[in-house]
Length: 594
Image: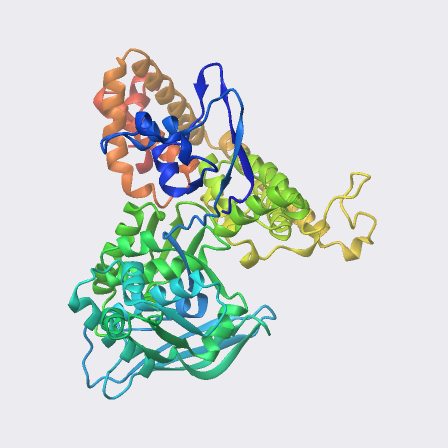
């Protein structure tokens, strides 16, 4: 922020507007013609505060005067940038020391391109024979070098710096061993080569490239103190490093993202830091990420492949995930499935980064057309999700930073979901809210019949209403639905007829009514504490079914079990006893009623 305009300090109503102590430290005020005012009677001792000195130094308030403020740049050391190819795949081994006999690291994954093609990506790291593979320390140094480059505006591959500047950016101490540690890291980074097969994204051509490149091409470290003593007359030569052309072009093409350095360096383990960089990239356009556990561990975080079991991989990743929850980067995480099919799901604590960025910049620029419309549409959809049983907080997270195209897709998902509910489709029979949540979470993966993706006409009808009957597949759906209702109706009629023809069936129905009446009578006479205790006992017995059944069916099962407990405890007669007592003749009793 530059303050080069004129400002006026005015005294009004006996209140003098003066800068605070902090402001005096940040802004150098050049008072014009101020020296005549600092005579002996206004001199102050060393204990006088900065604010009091400013008050004494200001001229008489009777004639407001203008002062020039010198330009000031306010810089935050908290935020830097991260190159997104380096965030996608590991650059280093997750340790501070690497076996010198290991010269290569290899990572592989697959990705589906927008056109539907699935490609395999490979990322191979080779180290110099003398210096070996990069370590987790070198990951930190790369981010420090990017920070220095950002401070100089990404102007040139060759970046000048002092060792002190780099050590402060890395949050390292400025003692001698830190300088030695830095030089060793630069040796490893200058010797490493990266071989990319369909894995280096070129933001200029918007394609994945196959290439071979390094991190830094050269560096030179100068001891500023030694050079200063040897040549006090001239300017002290600074240290420098030179980025590889491939990486620097990626910087210039804008394939970088913001990175919170304070948060990054506050993380305790190399696994936490690596996981943070990977998730921070993918949270740019989404608020959650789900992927296979083994792919994340071995191909993205870079865990050692000596961990062969899912349980041991979880033990390595879970402390890192917990730490990211503690620093409020993640709101939650969970492991899904079992065995080799285990997946892991992370949920961002702040939603997607792109949503906040677009909202902020659209508000400043006044453009905001598409993003603002998407936001308004998103608010309406959020209300619809809540109305369909999704918690409000979850619904807001689902709709954070949605594009207009995504909002349209989610609207179509809602129409399709309503149809499935109305037709009692088995896909939504167990957990309606869960089905809808998963569909909206990844709308681009959810398939919808074409006729549900059409928008509404101005006249109020859906597009396609005037199409021939043969070209309208939804009519077949509704026809099968009517046929299904007829079949259910026929079955119910057959059951009623069977009851009328079979006296034992009529007695069984009469007994069920008797039991329901007696249970209601017993419950009405019980205290609330007794009912709660009985309910808790039944819930404990039925707890294993809660994850299997949908909520409505689970409630019916619990209610039936509760009635059975009441019947046993309060001595409501079984069917054979009831039959003797009420009809005075025993009959063959179905086993299911005793």
